[in-house]
Length: 100
View 1 (tube, rainbow, N blue to C red):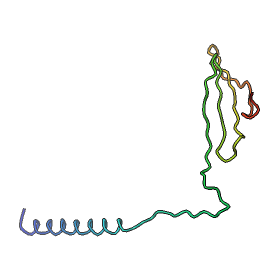
View 2 (cartoon, rainbow, N blue to C red; view 1 turned 180 degrees about the vertical axis):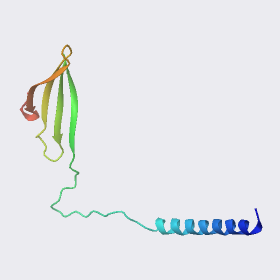
View 3 (cartoon, one colour; view 1 turned 135 degrees about the vertical axis):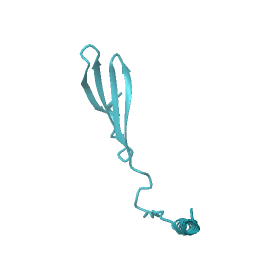
View 4 (cartoon, rainbow, N blue to C red; view 1 turned 30 degrees about the horizontal axis):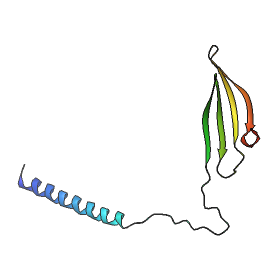
């Protein structure tokens, strides 16, 4: 390689280092976190829903559904799995607070 091309490559390398340093310093100074402010009448707890599967034995299983916001309104849907026909049928759907 001739002297001009080596000099040009060196200048490109220096420019890339300078651009990298400038970008790194400018991005590190940015704080993009959102602050959440609550009023006294707002809930502090997150609202999420859940669904869990429960094995009840003998081919039966239940799916427990609910959410954290409506406490006591969780339901369980009981299914039966028939191994011979490879089918799933719904047996019963009931609220958890109605179970004994």
